[in-house]
Length: 387
Image (cartoon, rainbow, N blue to C red; front, side, top):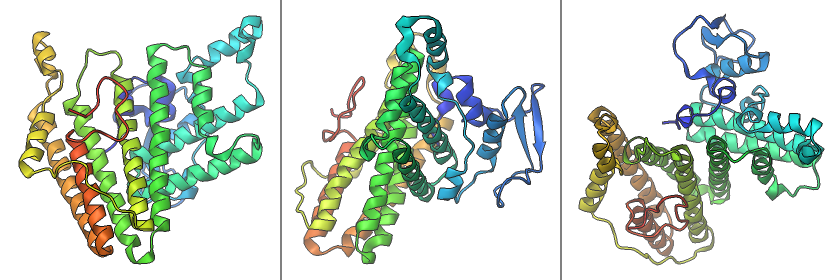
């Protein structure tokens, strides 16, 4: 599953430069690039449709979006074309133009630090797009390593910026040139959620590397199962539970929810790290969820939160059909079952007390998923999952 960036109404520069155009049919305003032999290895397709009028870099990016397939290595990510898409999604060009003629806008003339931060932002978001749309769980670990390499490079050029603060430069530069309109706030939230997702994947990567070799493969499998469950959980919420088609902040909330999921998993992972690496005891805080409660939550999640509003407005056509709901529910159930089994396998391989603590936090994560236990990091937008 992949996040629908195009549904967030991002500007054309992101759609074309970062999202590969979002079109599967050839139009008059396009050209076909045949036999992409200049691209490395076998990750190629016979033809790629390129809209006319794009720069060479944007055209290369669209080709890369088609040809970069799993497995994706660190070098694949680092070798992606440099595309300047961030500038067009905020008020960058307008502020720069005003700064040339109006002293009141002089603060918007980019400094060396600003230019470096913008390059970092473009590089990070370019890799993020490919990871999210073309990569699986293993590819995301490679993506995290590629981001780490980009951070190291940034630190060489900007030694005054602490390494653990480098990604804050991305949110700083996006915020500096944002005018505050809804469109740009939506984009800022997309950037922020992408950074938080990287931090969660990187936390997992470090955890996998830190555990004893005897359980490393089991932790890796739990990560892969969580990755797929997280995607399934998000997609059901985005496409079914949460509709709000009439709500102007929908793109912001979608990204806010994705960020919420990432932060909660990172907080849970911190607890698991102490259990497995340091033998910390964990006591279950919520009750064990029954199969009946799980099915009830699935049923509740299978209709839009705003179904009464949709009916009142006569917009029943916006209520998801079974063809949308059923595959997403099936995917959630399937990935949840695999995740539970992966955690049982890991728990069984741990010493008795550690295994018991691990089972306790598994039960609490289950409770949080269906809203029967308060999230560690609350959902910061309209509501939390706590009931």
